[in-house]
Image (tube, rainbow, N blue to C red; front, side, top):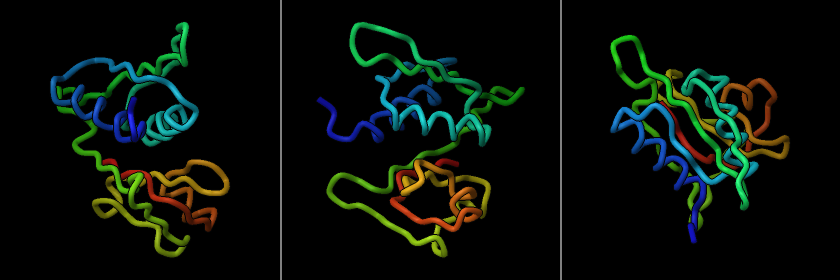
Length: 131
């Protein structure tokens, strides 16, 4: 049993990037699907899809690399943890690496990137940073 499924997802992606894997399979959930959707929109991954199985399904993430075989994702960090939640208001949404990276937040309007939170003027729980 995994205590923190989002941290597990980030670790699986981080490990796949380190070995230059093309794809990584992650046990699916609605929250992980939304995080993958945001990562695709922001250009950190190439694609994602849900594969059916007899349980909860599998989220297959296709990683993105530059023409020089460098990974687009250079780092990921889980911010809110089960023992310590981190909340921010809309005016204090963190910028990652001066805007090069992104933070993902869960808000009352759903899971959003930091740019969307600033535009919609909504705060929430900071899930992770990706750069």
